Amino acid sequence: MFEVQKKEKKMAARLKTLFGHIQEHKTPTDVSTVLTHASPYTVSYKYTLNSPRLTEKQRQFYEDYGYLVIKKLVPEYSLQKYRERFEQICKKEVVVPGLTIMRDVAISKDEFVPGQKAVTKIQNFQLDEELFEYCKLPEVLDYVEAIVGSNIKAIHTMLINKPPDPGRKTSRHPMHQDLHYFPMKPAEKIVCSWTAMQKVNRENGCLVVLPGTHKGKLLKHDYPEWEGGVNKMYHGVRDYDPSMPRSHLEMEAGDTVFFHPLLIHGSGMNRTKDFRKSISCHYASSEIEFAEQDSQSTISEELLDLVSKKFKVPRESIKYEDIWKIKSRTVKGRSDW
Image 1: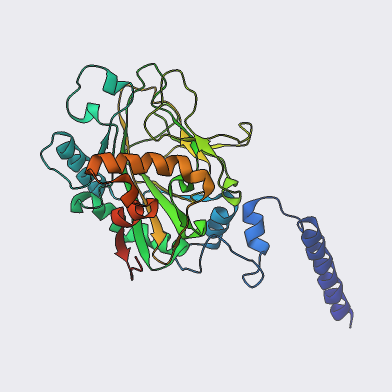
Image 2: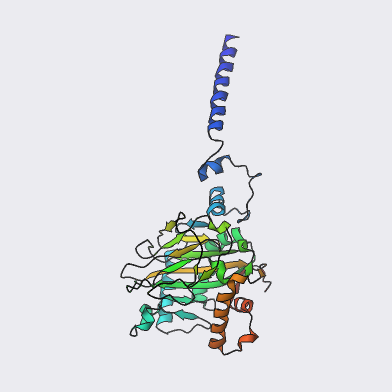
């Protein structure tokens, strides 16, 4: 009898300790604690889908902050292939249909600079099989599918060659939301993958994000009033609190960040003497709807004028959504447009 009572007292003491521990942590403040105590049957997810690819911690992080960095996702041999293709394009050894080649506003006003140093970004490489391979990488698509679903379109592609700043601060990219450019809804069915092609840090202008801003609405954008000039279509958010907490995403080659189109983000100046390269693709579910918002009127007019002049088609014969339908390419699953 004595032994039984002794065991009962020990059990009671353990329960008391456990109860006190639970009471102490019933309002957790850090993500890891929330995930430890969360029940999969009570948590409601808005920005991600059920998928074995995302751990609970990764899923909750994307839900809370609107972005997720995956280390060493893209192999070096793939990155090297993209670097070599970029160089071929810059040297005009290959011609890619529909490709848009951009130059920094400061560089374009100076004397001619040959090769890669003249090009700061190429866009719309969806018709180049070498570069489009990035958009089809299984290791990337696994994460994309966990966010937008299995029917996937590549809607916008870029290889960025951020130049050393010439002293005019034109290598900066203003804080913005990517949804500003896309006449589509819902925003939850769009995601960007952005992969560092080399070491990226604050010195050479890494991405900077405002965590949690993906939970807000699309804000008004326009060209920032910068003395050194602003690159074409580099619109920035007009009204946001610059004192909001921000995260600088310093990354190694192959690291990839996935982020929501309403997340406010940008990048700083490249203060080094070398160009900083990254490659990215915006994906959308092929089930997405086209819907232009009032706040997108400035960018839509600008892009429609550009397309009209470039392809010599009457301005009134094209709609903004037509541009995105034409430049998009199915990556996986069925295509509804």
